Image (cartoon, rainbow over the protein chains, first blue to last red):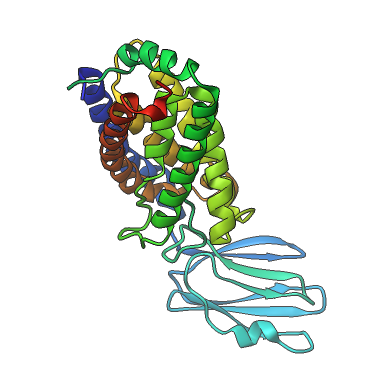
Length: 121
Length: 186
């Protein structure tokens, strides 16, 4: 190992250790703490911290979105088979409930908390 | 024995010029070595998410040292394709990352090899390993639009640094052996 190698290794190690805190600072505000409700009338951001019931106007009628204990669910919707209601409560980042007839999407935002999507080699 | 890349290059270049066939054979052998190492690595479960051994990098560094830049690029990209085909991940979302990593590693190692800073094969290997990881994270963030992925980057970068050193020593050893054998064309 030459002198240049050692300098390179130290520089990379320092940079690698700095990425962690830098990312934390940059993305700290985007933790899994809010739900994004998207409908024909636009997008609403709801914090998951406080419980509430929200009525969203869909294409066929209203969709009732409920936030309880940090998880979000669709309690009632004006649609034929209410698949969105059957999904139940979702809370982890990236999860979503979709009501297709009403064109309403409820998405839990923020950093993914776990699990692998793909493995690169 | 300290083998500096720049001190090694003229000897190696002279050795490789002597035989076209041996050059071709060496390229093929190194490609198959890279594929086997890649396959072995793919069947080893990563102990930590984001950590990879980068064993195939040994073959790429050896190719870079013995054969030059173009064969090293060919081996690097073909390895990703062949291993992807064998593991069933070719043309999946992860293969974009794999190709980006292989390409970035090649570029970084060529820069390190040409630089006058005096990197040994260990330094060149570290450059390749770290560039591989850095490129994969860059592409992953660009593809998913989730910068939170970068929280895993320090772990990946530090392990790639460690294994870059290990594979660099392995490559240096192989190169020093191949230099005096018939494989280098002498």
